[in-house]
Image (cartoon, rainbow, N blue to C red; front, side, top):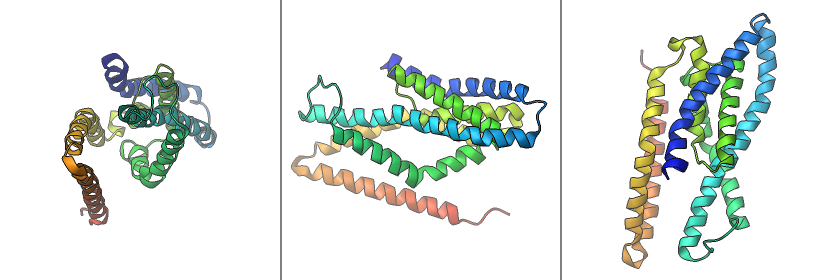
Length: 235
């Protein structure tokens, strides 16, 4: 677990920072004598390719993790042999649909955070960040290392944004992302362990409690988000 899960997960964001910074440094040097309008025009279109590559590698990494968890549950219940070569087709289709639906439904808030709140990035910086993230995700997927797309692209945006100086990066937002990144793994372990204990409640009541808890948590988070969104801006 340490070599294939923890170490890659911890290193991926820092690799994103380093690779994106080197890429934007090289791009800045190559286009130093070009007109900014032409440079931005070119990299806006180049981002169609780099953004598509991020979406593709996002699927090669995060979708595989989702399918792996479902397959593990099927193995635990005896519905799938432990020596299976690939998960059932319905698992693959379900994971793909869930990934797409989740990105469409809740991805815009994350996009706004990465695109504007960490640092105000221009098209060349966006291209560098996307290319760095996609390259890392593709490489880790080839070796079977599960890493976080969100944390990797966050690190890449930090690296690309830092080319304009450290003051160009909103380090408070970056610190919040870092804190969430640190807490993700232990909190997921605690929640998973708690859910396992709840499901052991006899009579099927544990499943009811799990769903009730999920609904209550979703309602609470949704209400909190709406309250923050509608709150008046400070004077």
